[in-house]
Image (cartoon, rainbow, N blue to C red; front, side, top):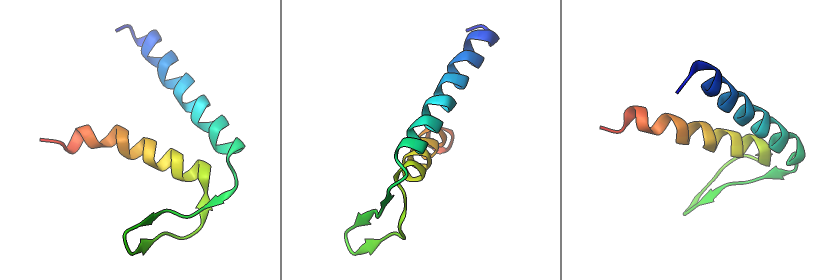
Length: 61
């Protein structure tokens, strides 16, 4: 894959996440079993889960 194409894909992904984060500014709480997170904007939660999903293959052996 050429460097320009890779840069374009990364740039479009970052722009998409930024737009999604701005449009989803309402607070949300993540609940799992008995654990409950603090109230964060939905866009932040989505961006964090996307980043975690990108980083997971680096630690998967």
